[in-house]
Amino acid sequence: ELDRDGVAREATPDMGTKCVGRGFVTFTDTWIPEQNLLGAEGKGFTEVMQGFDFSRALIGLQVIGAAQVTLDETWEYAGQRMAFDQPISKFQGLSFPLAEADTLLTAARVLCQKTLWLKDAGLPHTKEAAMCKWWAPKTAYDVINQCLLSHGQFGYLTTRPIEQRMRDVLGLQIGDGTAQIMKLIISRQNLPREVAP
Image (cartoon, rainbow, N blue to C red; front, top):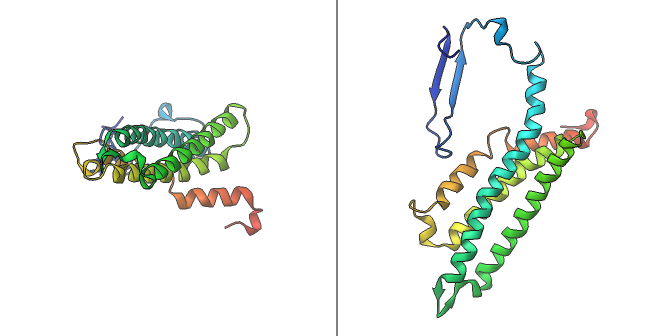
């Protein structure tokens, strides 16, 4: 119960993901009754870490979704926006980066799907989950940024959803572990303990 003595809540004014209530909960000398215990006593850290392997793949799919809809809108825009008496999609300088973005999003999606398949099969997937968590948000951010640039001044407007998606995806590069932590996990999964960072 959040009205217990010693429980303090503070909302955070994040720059993105405005629809999600985020903040900090602080416990100071707070008594929690035994019936409020979640999971087995002393096993909380392990259970949370195992949950991360699932949520990291889901975060990957979440950011890929935001990037994919932005890319789809950009392909459509490029086919309709005229410059020099032709659609801007005719210019390789615009269409080739979008083709690269399409390829990267497909690869990131497959990695996330493989991770979830491994989880469903009861197979180890910590390394793959960490790959999803650092690479998919970075890729999604880069794709959305390219799409924003492809829209020119119209992409920079706050009346269009591109800038919001970019801010939201940026925040998901942090939650559930930063890219540096994910790379540490991947390294430790690939190396013997005595030579791992």
